[in-house]
Image 1 (cartoon, helix red, strand yellow):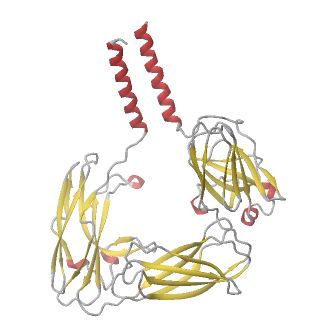
Image 2: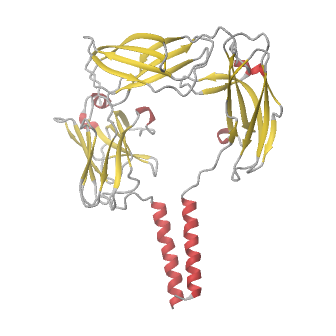
Image 3: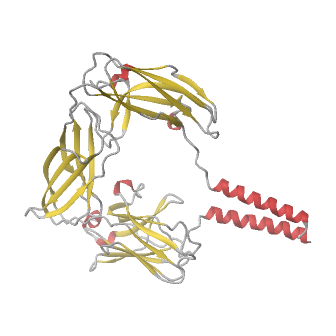
Length: 457
């Protein structure tokens, strides 16, 4: 190999690496904070100094920052939210106790800044907890929907060292979400902290029985990582994954501290008007080029048959449940039923078509007005953000929908009165490779080959 050609080849390889780095985006670091929460026991009349260091990476743009003391709010999903002073009406607010020495400052890329929060606890403070949020945020850039703000909320959670701490709570509501066949059946317990101190590691246990008292399910949540702040109401959600016949069911919900006392209990009932089918459980299979394979849900309602040669290398494929309310916008001439799921692991095209079989539910049939011939299998193509309604065979004897496909993503059973015809026929391709890097690699190979050819000539 000639030295000059070797140098050029090395340069080309460097260009190839750089191009791949451009195609595969690198995450940008966000703001970092040392002192991201203050949690401690304080005495009446005590003053606490709380330093907070904010830094950015070298890839961040310059930022003008602001620091504000806000009220402490909590969303139903238990996450903490900053409240404007006008909305901070809690008797357990610590907002007025806190001052910040430098409320506005500038951050250059790769630099840091330390500010100091001084917490002055009144001498006549009562028992319980006191709460505030220190909001560190950049001054807004842009306008309208392009408005960008980088922000970090720092919780301040103090326990007053004084007698009279109470840990009490009340379940204010116990209900189910919408009962849709093929979708998770959520049991929602709304719980209010009626005490005067926060508590973490709360657990929700739910028991479901039928009209005869037979146990259908026992469900529980993991201990919460968020503390429940006094005066706030949060939701605990468990999903019932059991088939239910029409009838009336009883649910008993208990909220307790992990390894601690029961805080409250509530009993309620719900009615199932038509047979409920739980969503498919997650299932996986490893496909190989030499062998055929089948990916199927444990209840057999969804199965996908891959012929030998469908893939060019070993690859793990996973079937996952998908929430109906998270489906991308449905086409105007179609209506979603209740069955939807996702097939993950196949980012490109199959070399040979797979066959997909899905048993439709009563909810799917309702979407079609009772006419099963209107049901089709629909695939969401993420590359162009569109739904494709596939030519679908309907077997009313086995309540099964069947279609062939060479790609996988999000799937749904839909009802459509429009005639579904193949668009462009079958296409094969390369599996599990994004098209852009493939084309880029081919282009670079052509360039390198051209330089080699000229050098040789």
